Length: 216
Ligand code: SF4
Image 1 (cartoon, rainbow, N blue to C red):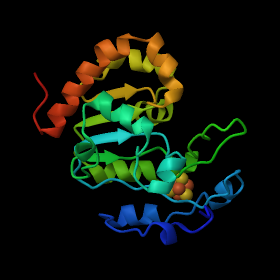
Image 2: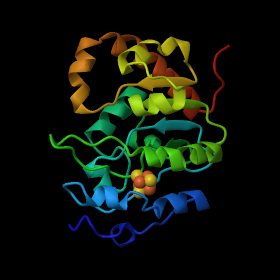
Image 3: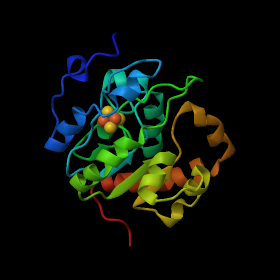
Image 4: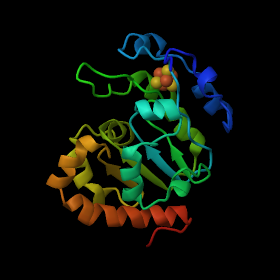
């Protein structure tokens, strides 16, 4: 597949719910930046939200698999995240209830070691606030990884510390580590995450998915 093809030729931009989503899907602000990476790919924003969704998943940026499929978290990281949240694939991809809004909508490319580059800051500067305004009545924000922690919490604390402080923000906000396989050692080293955070997270997700109020 020629990754330098314009996005519209590979994946027609259908089913986009509003003018803002269509504007993001057509964005090419990072064209020069991506062309300079090893994959020399064209911008291909993965846009997955509808105004009115109650649960926000603020992620980092698509990886290569998602870049090709056009579906967010359609990869092993997504399988682990769905397990953490207690959501089936059908629920996770129900845009009437779940908005998936990363800190960059496009795959950023790889660094010299083959790891994904960080999300280009211009994306969050340009789009993230606009999407948050458009979403409106979010009942639960799930912040996946340090970039989302920084934008939503204004915190520059290390990810482990931010996640460990989860009780200070629950049940309306849960900062999480990234569910990538690269964090498997982190999960082993921090068993409190599975033992304490995940049960509370799943209960909060279920309440919002079922549109029930938080307990007093
Ligand atoms: S990453 Fe964001 S700002 Fe850059 S081209 Fe994609 S949508 Fe545009």
